[in-house]
Length: 149
Image 1 (cartoon, rainbow, N blue to C red):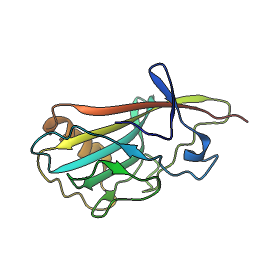
Image 2: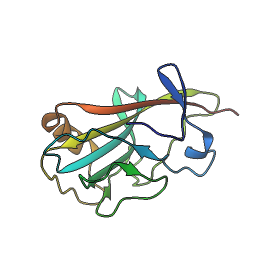
Image 3: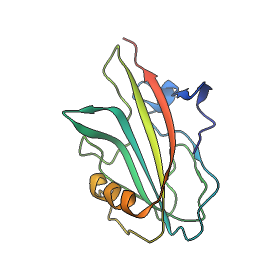
């Protein structure tokens, strides 16, 4: 998985402020290739690398992405896809670390060999556990964002 919106520097990418609460607060364009044979659905999670209270922090969860999809445009949900809740109990994508801190985020893509059919507002923990069981590996994109102020 990669994003043409992110500038790479070695093994990590900088997330432009446009894709955070300091900008439009929409996800960047995401692309992938090499779809495994038998893929029925894609699922994407955006997680903060630093856990809060020893729990994963979900910034965004998107499931029901068709197997023919290899690009998600910035701010556009693909037809048939559904958004799950983030850790703030909202279905909104939002990257917003505390002022003056830098946070690392992991965009995680799973190619699922069966349809999960989650409902809108699904629990990302449940779907991610299912994805971890069903998908032999995941595409990862790591990005950091430093919020000034």
